[in-house]
Image (cartoon, rainbow, N blue to C red; front, side, top):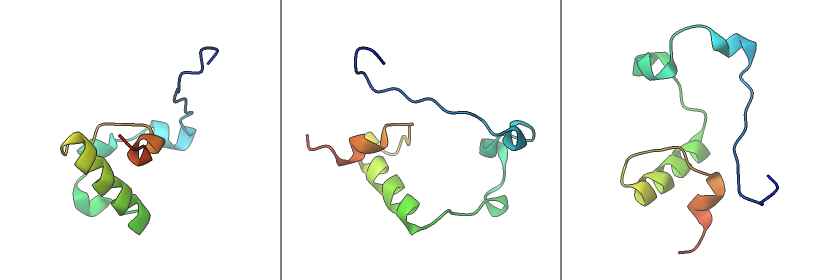
Length: 64
């Protein structure tokens, strides 16, 4: 962005456009990607009080 503000942009793969939203799937239909994602989720949970709202990845590592 011209003002230097962070922004998040993403494209959706056409293969992922159809079907049920992931939030509606039962846990047994999902799998974890790996241990690092679990660690990042734990860090995020600490920062936002278990809300698990979307946030910039770099914000998990900024000193406050």
